[in-house]
Each structure stands twice: as structure tokens, then as C-alpha cells.
Length: 424
Image 1 (cartoon, rainbow, N blue to C red):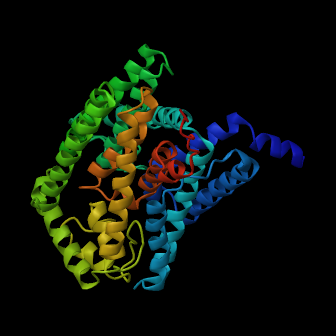
Image 2: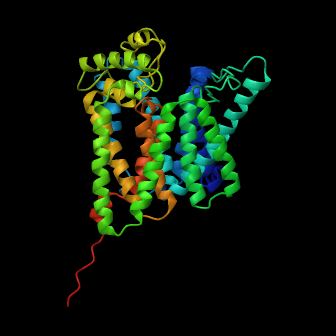
Image 3: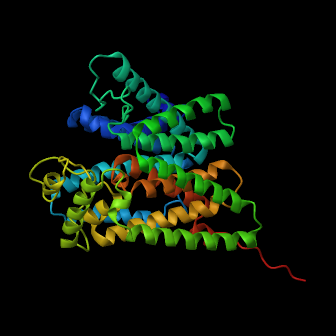
């Protein structure tokens, strides 16, 4: 029996099915948080983690560790864990760390035991399930049933033109899922991993749902992804010397854009909710300044109880009330881990983007674009969403950063055997 179980855990079908289940769980976890009791949710997560660890243990010898674990990313999650020593909310921090590290483990599974092609296929297949279910729920709630099914927070507003939420619990969650799906399906199309006519139908569905969310940030994200794709594709066609000049010019441009973005008024990125976000962000900044260096301690998604300060205070200050995040990953990380944590996150994000960019602009295969496009999407979406403090953001950050490091690790370059010079 044990041998049979071990054989099943080591099969490729089980590995890929587990990868798809992990991604589906991460995608819909925010809506599960509102739809099912916490005890049931924790039991689901514990079971998934146990299966992941069991499969990892059986296939341990296939994992390639060296040069794949970015030290910058490890430093950020070390700060997340260490915040338990200085937190103002020990129980909430312990809960938040446990939830975050659970998805770090699942991200490690994707990065170490699944190659980039398998990860892209898993995301593509998981996105088909999630977006098909979302479209179906929107049609049923908005055009068929007299009263909408509100289990996943869907309001059934399809007839009124949206905003659509599907099974994701919010327009922001659905829009991000659509954009993530478009990245994966583009790689599948370029890599001839699926019939083009099928992909065209899925892309049309994704773009339709994306438009129904009514989010300006979604259009901006799509423009950013197209720009990254076009520039890296153009750079790849240049000879190495010209490519180096092009990389330098692009780096200057990206740096200038980031500087302008960081110094811009918050209303630039308010996404149609200027006053609400301005009020919340001002309150978050004020609280962050009171614990500027190390922050209030990591909690991930904010707790909902009335006794957990400062999150209970922020829920009252926000015009909408009951907020679960700062609606900006950068402000949220600064609040929870201080300037030190924010710097660690920016370093990890910047190095991951740089590695992914260099690989995508030098290698022909479309799958090498997946890490840089995913990191670019996370970085842009984090301006008005705390995606990188949530389950899906943590999973994608780990998987994409490690995928980029697999192809561009300085430790591999140092340890690579050097050819002896030719003796004339």
C-alpha cells in the first residue's frame, strides 16, 4: 500500500494536477474567505499543504536547488517571519505568517518541481476553469435567476454592464485573473502548446470579462504587459553590443518612470476611487510613520476583529469601512514591516524583474517571457492593490522570481567552470 501511494505521489499526472489545484485555490481564496467558515478554510489549506509536502518528499531528488533560491526573496520572507518578535499583534501576526508561508511552500513546489512550461500550462488550465465558472455565474446571476447567488459576492450586474466579479469576489480579483490568463495563453500560443482556435476563444472570453470589470488599472496593466513584450522582443533581435546599449537606455527609462510614479499624487493611481483611497492611504502613512523602521508586524490580509489595532482603526477611517488591506502592496508592506521590509521587497522585486528581463530579451523561446511579464503585472497591480500580501501574490512572486533566477543566477555564473585559455 505504501509503495502504491509513493508511486502515485511520484507520477507526472498527480504533480500537474496538484499544480493546477494550487493555482485555482490561490485564485479564488479571497472569495473563499467570504464564502466558507474559517475552520473549513484552514482544513482545506492544511490538507493541500500536506499533499504538497508529501509529493515534494517523494520527488525531492528531482528538485534543483542551487542558484534558484534568490537571497533577496529569502531576506524578505525572513523579515516576514522575524516580525513576530516585534509585532504589536502577536496572535494576528502568527496567523498571517502561517498563511503566507503556506503559499511560499506551494510556490517552492511550483518553482522546484515544475519547469516553466509546466507552470504556464498549469496557470493556463486553472485560468480556464476559473474564468469559465466566472462567466457562467455572471450569466446565471445577471440574466437567468431572479435573485443572484451571492455565495462568492457576485451581485448579478451583467445586464447593467458590470462591474463583473465572477467567482473572484471583486472586480480587481477577476481583472487580475484575466490578465494572468492572457500571459499564460500568449506563451501557449507562441509555444504551440494548444490549438490556436481554442486559445482565440479563451482570449476573447478573458478580454470580455476584463472589460466588464470596468477598471482603468486593468487597461494600464495590459498596456504595460504589451510594452514589456514588444521591447524585449525587439531587443532580442539586436546583436549583443547593441542589445547592451538598448538595455541601458531601457533601464534609465524604467528608473525614471518609477521615480515619477513614487513621487506622483495618490490620485493618479486611484482608479476611479480617488477620495476613498486618498483617505485610506493617508491614514496608513500616518500609522506607518509611527513605526517607521520595522512596522507593526506582518499580518498579510488584515484581520476583521475590532480589537486588533491599528487595523480596526483603519477599518473605521476608511470611507467604505471593513477594509482588509491598504489597497497598495507597497504601503501595506511599509505598514507591516516598515521601511526595512519595503526595501527588501523592492530589492527582491527589482532583481527578479531584471533577471527576467535579461533572459526574455536574449532567448527566443516564448516561455522565457513568463517570469518578467508576471513580475511586471505584480509590480503594476500593487500600486492600487495589496496583491503581494495576499495568497495569490505570494505564490506568483515566489514562482516567478525563482523561475527567473533559474536562468540568470549570479551564483551559477560564479560556480560555472571556466575554459582554460588556449596556448598558442
